Image (cartoon, rainbow, N blue to C red; front, side):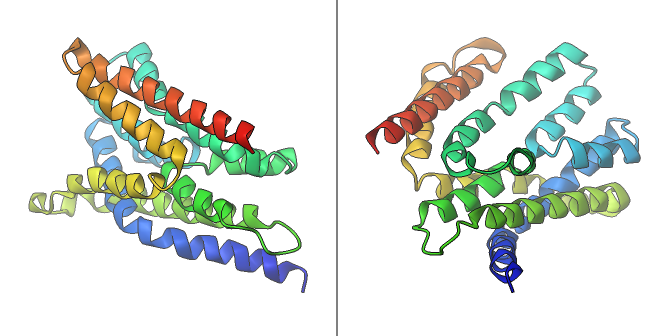
Amino acid sequence: MRDKPRLAEFLAGCRDESPLLLGVAPFGMIYGIAALAAGVPAWLAQLASAIVFAGAAQLVIVQMLAAGAGFVPIALTSGLLNLRHVLYSASMAEYVRHLPRRWRLLLAYVLTDEAYAVAVLRYQRRETATADLRHWYFLGAGFTLWAGWQLSTAAGLLFGATIPPEWELDFAVPLTFIALLTLLLRERAGQAAALVAGLGALAFAALPYKLGLVAAILLGLAAGAWTVRRLERAR
């Protein structure tokens, strides 16, 4: 009987995350197709999805491999892409700091754009239960996304060559992030990060090598992290 509330939270996270798989599935297939095109063995591409579990970074890595980029540029680019997780971590820290280390490590692993967007809204709702079991909801959302990412990667690796070019699955990538943006704009830290990053992208658009985008990312992260700390002090 004790496990029923935990299972209910876990399944609620699975349920609320599931609609986002409509955008994630084509994204994962694109990665699988791109990995094969870059000469990455299928087993290694699938292993990367299981271990790295970072869609945008994985896609950029295989594209840079196909272009013959070296280790250092690939590492720097993927690292910059994933800097946004610093903001996610800062936002979620106040909700999970009471958990044992094993839980924090597990939730850190499944902390992705889509899982964060769903889980943070659950945390922001008032908790009415005697025990706070919202980390089970977070785990359900993260697990659903992880499983969907593995399956979509496998589909891209297995059936990528048979997908008609006119399907143009690339549309799923920007649409997925637009959907996430609408969710994240509900909280102040996300609003601050989006506003500052947008202004930064415009201000530094003339910089070469797309460094303006890098600067915008860093400024947005700083604005979001500053907003999180300010809200924590105000409580």
